[in-house]
Structure formats: structure tokens, C-alpha cells
Image 1 (cartoon, rainbow over the protein chains, first blue to last red):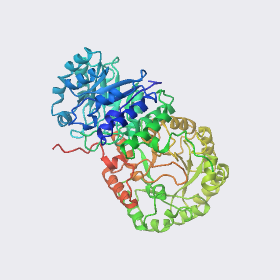
Image 2 (tube, rainbow over the protein chains, first blue to last red):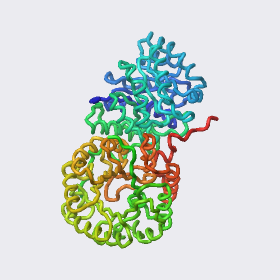
Image 3 (cartoon, one colour):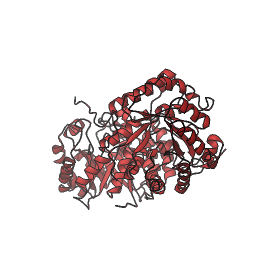
Length: 303
Length: 303
């Protein structure tokens, strides 16, 4: 299947920053505004979670109230429950994400409930969102493996998807929560879920924990997948997942796609500058090769 | 094309260590011996270069005289010229690599000669090697792009290959010297060179400078390529190439291949331990995700 355009959702401001040391509200606003200016099509801006659970997102309302909202960008927020979805719609978000882990053990570790119990809430969250003009995406965590349980059967992930869509979810996403995704696991998962819902948007979220993120993207492109998450500079990981490291860096994804002739709309040079800014905000070297070396088109002067 | 077995050449002891600060001879011997014990099929052990050019390899004869030579492992040495090939055959090597850069500018920066001038030596090097029971592999550097010239036309690489094979080279390899390789460039190169020489072994050498190494491997597997270089822990880069960073880490390559059901013969757990040892030798954190996080099969205890 030939893909000529990919829609990237930038998750650095939320997924990325939630596993870094907290940074000032003003820096979050600068980061989101700078990302909007790179012509990314989508940005996950904040999450509405309890500040004791994720202190990094305690200022979500303030951040969102102050960012420059580019009419060309789709902004979204993550919400864990009814209270979070209520806050998100009150703040004016039209796209809201909720997370359910395919692994019972991971879901229990995360929010002390079984996968089935979490799925029971989806209909209510959908109703609340739809009633307020917002859509709901269900992110299926540990879709490519669980750090506690190991392999997760694609049929189990498909069952979660079936439940979510039956309850009204508008979109689904598959999270490679601790970087256990490989080309083989991507194929097996997409074989199990993609043919069933040709009209439901499906997004993939890879971590580069074991170096496979872009190989996974390449595999998914063969299946016609056109939506991917990525995090500027490779910000973040997953605070609940031992051994997790870096999200796929947005500039590495854009760099490979553009070289393949696949459009993203993103200004890569501007994005690399934002990655450099993000590195300054978090005060550590971020794991992005394209940030370090520049794109392959950046030549060395002959001296 | 379905590949069920890949032959990996471990290049950490030579390509890797030549761009690290020099380490003691005894550590090099320990490293090679430990690598042999992981059941790698091939190891590039040393290079016979001028000690002023590459002081890291000044003890090549001593290292090679002391390593335990596993009869199941193919060992090789890199040599830049007649003198180097002579030293390699005198030391008893049966596989010798020489490097020619497809980029004139890179070749001149590297050894102050044009690509054409370097190619003029191949016949003599082949004669010397063959006369002493050794084979010659021509490594085509900058096959996927040159940091000075930019894109290198696949037809230019094919011309280098034609010349090398006409002059008796037994094998060819394609070096992604500064990590400019991408799935697109791999496809374009293999389209240009692979069909012409179905019986000549072709090996690919990727750097992970921009995160694409395993995506490149995946692309090459589709072409039936079964030979790859990799460097334990991701040791090394290229001292002549500005912006170059890390070779593809051997354990990341083995990890992905095994998950895909492709055999390498390598004991991954043992290899990760060698990567840890190599990290101790060079005294810096190596850029290997599988070394940091362990393989995807390594689970977290449920507490």
C-alpha cells in the first residue's frame, strides 16, 4: 500500500514532559507555540490528571489558556476519567484521549483496575465528550508487549478495540508503552485489527527503547497506516513502565518520511530548532540523532 | 525475498575501537575473545594501518597473536594499502578488507587520492592476497551519501563495484559512513548493484546516526541481503567523517532479527554482557538501547 502523506501527532508537551522534571508554565507555552509554528498537523498539548499523580501537568488549564491556538493544528488532551474529560471539554478541547492497557497487569499497576473495568467506562466518557462536541480516542497501551506479562496476544488487543468501538470511540491508537514493538509485532497486530475497521482512524505510538521505532514505522506504512505519534527531541517515556526510554523523536520520523517522498507538512529545520529549545528546557541531552547530526542533507564544508 | 538466516560481522574491535580513546592491548584481546564466545560468525579483529594515522590499532600484531582463534569464527583485518595487506597475510589473515570511497571528495579527505586512483590499486592488492591464500573484500565507503558531496548516485557506486569485481575482489560491502542511509537510499542502491552480481557476497554496514539503521536493515532483508556489519554496544563511528556517530549496535540487530524468526547463531544474552564489558573498557555510556533496557523478553517482576 503506497502512502504519500502522514499525519504526525506531536506528543512532547504531554507524553514527553510528564516524564521529565517539571518545567515552568511559561516554557510549556513557548514549546507548544513553537511546535505549532512548525506546521505539525496535531499536537497533544496537556493532560487533565490529578496533580498528585502527575505534578508535571498540574498547570494544564493555565498552559492551554495561554497557548496560541493555530487554526491549522488539531490540539488534543489526555484525560484518565470522567473528571478529566469534563475538565478537557470545559477547557474547549475537541479531541480527547483516554488510555486503556491491553495488559491487565499493566492496567492495574497504572490505575489499580482491570482492563475490563477500564473498558466499562468508555461509553460514559464517549457520551460526555460527544455531548460537548468533542471526540474520544482510545489509546490501547502495551499493544506490542507488556513489561510484566510479556507478549500480548493481538487477539487481546483486538478485543479491546472491539469493545472501545462498540462503545462509541471515534479513533483508536496503539501504544508501544515500553518499546517492545518490533516489525514482527507490528505486522501481527495490524493483521489482527486493521481489516476489521477500515473506516476507523488508527494511530501508532512507538518508543525507540530498543532501536526499532523507525523499522516499526516502515512496517506500518506497508499496511497503509498514515498516523503516528512522535515526541520532539525524543522527550519522555512512561513513568509507570520500568525500563522505558525515549519516545520516537519527531524529527527522526519527519526526516525519514520526507526522504521517502512522504509529505508531513512539517518544517524539519524549524522542528530541529524546537528540539534544541526543548533540550534547554529539560536540561539534559535528548536522544535524537537528527537533532545531534542534522538531517542527511546538511553537508560539511570542504576545507 | 524471505531471509531465514543472517551472517553478522562484528566490527567493534576494529571499526569501533578506532574511534574511541586507545584502550590497553589486554582489553582488546579480552573483547575479541568474549565476542568469539557469543558464536558470532564473523569478527573484524584489527586493521594494519600506520600507527600515526590510527594509534588505536598500533598493537594489531600483538592483539592478533594473542587472541583465541575460534575455528567456527571467520576473522578479518582491514588494510589500507600493499604494506597493510602484506602485514595482514603475514599475520595469517585469510580475509582482508580494503576501503574505497565512492565519493571523490571523501576519498581525498581520507587518503588524499581520488576514487579512481584508489581503484587502480585493487588488482595489486587482490594479487597479493590471493597469492597468500587470502580473499579481498572491497568496502565502498559513502555508498549512501557523502558528508561533503551529499547524495552519491547509485550508478557511481555501481561503477566502483564493477571496477572492484573486474579486478578480482571476492566480496563487496557498502558503508553508510556518516549515517546518511535511509530505506529509500538502500532500495535505490540495491536496485543498482544487486542484480548485476548474484554470486558476489554483498554486505551492508549501517550507522545509526539518524535513527534509521534498523529500518535500513529491514529494507535490505526484503532484497535478500543476508550479511550485515554491526558493532557491539554501538562502539565507534568514523574518525574522518564529521557528524558521524555510532555504528548500529550488534545486540539491537540480533534482537530484532531473532524476534523476526531470523537466525544469527548469536547468544544474545552473552552479547549484551560483552557490550557491558566494552562500555567498561571505553569508559562511556554506549548508545545501545538493548544494552540499556535488555531484550523485550526481559520482564519486570510484579511487586
